[in-house]
Length: 172
Image (tube, rainbow, N blue to C red; front, top):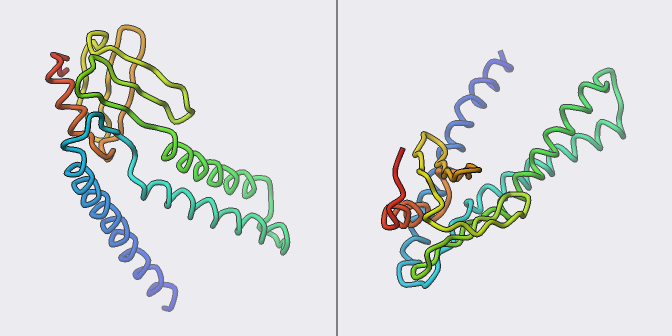
């Protein structure tokens, strides 16, 4: 009976926490958007909450990993070590992409600067974009040779879409 209560509570707490995180992202995005109205260039970036989620998950799974090594029992096997290691790497990637990934939009220039999660930087002219696609969770910017992906929860995304429309980039 106790396990059923714990499962029911955890199943009800998880959507509340996720909903609170999404509400916080939306609120902070609107606040930053108002601050950027008069700036010469605008920075599109991932929400800071992504970095904190990645940091907390990496910390949690690192503690689990070390506890598993310090106090081994029957559950320690290569599969468990692999899964925990993958979650640690996923958390590290989330932190790194939150710190690295960004798009710089200039009000008076005909290009933008796109930096990937791995730190590679592209200077892209608006005339090089073939089209952009507005999906459910991603905005896809397509050039002749490459596609660039933007998370729909990114801060200041509205400025990017507006700038693409001003420069005549077609919506697919």
